[in-house]
Structure formats: C-alpha cells, structure tokens
Length: 213
Image (cartoon, rainbow, N blue to C red; front, side, top):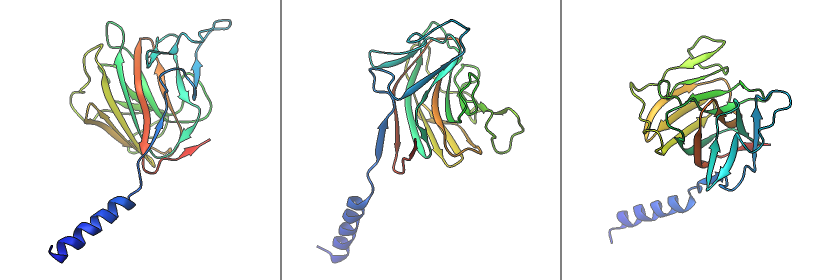
C-alpha cells in the first residue's frame, strides 16, 4: 500500500473516532406531559386541565382552546429542535412554536414565535428584539415567496437551529426564515391559539447541547 494513502486513511479513522457524539434529548415521551408546564388564559373558576394539551397515541394534541401555551420546564441555550406537526381539524388554523421564551409566564409571552398559520407560515414574531427591525413588537417575514407546508391533515417536519442569538427555521427541508435576536437562552413552547394541532417526535439534537435548570 502506498504510504501516503495509508497515513491519510489512518488520520481519517482517528478523526472519526475522536469526533464528539451527537447528543439527543427527547422533550415529549409520547405518553404524558412530563417535563412540560401548561399556561392558559382561563376565566375565574374555569379549568381545562388535560383538555387543551394532552398526550394520545404518541402525539401531543392541542385543542386550541383556551389561548395559551405549553412550555418546557427547563431553559436551553444552543440546540437544534426537531418536531413534526399537522393541522388536526378541517382547515389550517393559528398556531406557533416559541424559542427563547423568557421568564414570567403569561398568555402572550416574551419570546420569538414561528407563526404557523397558512397566510403567515414561516413568519418570526414576538417581543424579543430582532436585529434590523423596529419594535416594540418585532415581525420578520419569511425569506421564501411561498411556504412549503403540506395540506391539512398531513405531517410536516420542522427544525430550528438556535445558536447564540441566531435562529434559523427549516420546514420540510426548506429554509423559510432566519434572524438574530437579543436572547441567547430560554424555554421552548407550543401555542394554543384557537384551533386543533398535533405534534410528535419532539427532541433536541446538538453536539454542544446545554441546559439551564
């Protein structure tokens, strides 16, 4: 064997064996809402426990009523968030995924929301400052002309890359938006905003996955 090819192969093998393994953290176990906190806009005396957000057949179901969200109990810094979702009713409805959600639970929280309505699919919005935009409410239009969501009832795949203040969002393999915000850590949340949605396969993946308790 040519000594140069041998040394090159040996170097590649050493690099692969020394490369850090990817870390996976499952956020939704498919059976219950362990690790999540529900925040709802309910009138005095009303209770919606187990009705707005609940686990069924490996799916995290969202009824859409009342308004609110379900968030992780832990904060996260740098990560890639993977999830699958679908509109579960007869039409596309309001919904959203929050990253960099801050302390102080309230129905309209401080964070960066990825809007999931058909007309605004892929828009980033919220009270967290987004670079290059005027506040106090920040809204960044998607960077593709049309959003590649699938029809009502079909599953979509979405990934969020959150690194420092940078946020990038892929929908069904297409980069639909990217922004830089002034928050570098926070909770992850799924919104209830009037209509039925389903989520599954929710997990974090990153070689430098970090958490804050």
